[in-house]
Length: 261
Image (cartoon, rainbow, N blue to C red; front, side, top):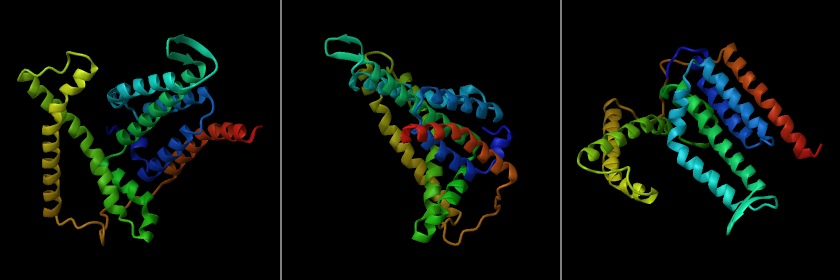
């Protein structure tokens, strides 16, 4: 979503590295309040990027069912000593609620940070950034360019596939299909007829993309040059330093608790 903000103009390589560092940081959190601390940081990024909160909601909405399943399973199957409520074989403990909250916040923060990256970085910039980050692997004969292009194409086609699912669903509803009635298992079985036309459309688009790339003489990353080369500026490194400053309290609390002080 191009808004012209300085976050959109920042180096894609440093944004990807920042996402990687924040991902590690999420799994190092030892205090509940730090999750809300990182949520506040997400809100600051959203404001500076001049994006609306509804864009994040679009990324979270398809995963609500996954969030709920993860939350419930952690509550029911995490053993603990402090029982809050019990009915038959169902036991809810304080440890289960704590574990459910931790997993819920981790998954949600991962999705939010990833969504912010894709909202502020174009597919071409994302491909270049991934290639720059993986450049050292070229010394080990790893196909860095092809791998980064594959990831970028996969990200690029996610909204396309979502749009295709919506079109197929509307077409089948016009022919009398019902996707809303019944229990959850009935609803899931109703979506099976969507898979076959979706796979057909996916293979068709993949074939069209391959023909388009071959017609433009694409032959992989060997000997390939760039029309524009990006160089990191002072503001890029300043943004990266700000990210490091944000995660510094998390690292301090983690290593203090790990060392036992």
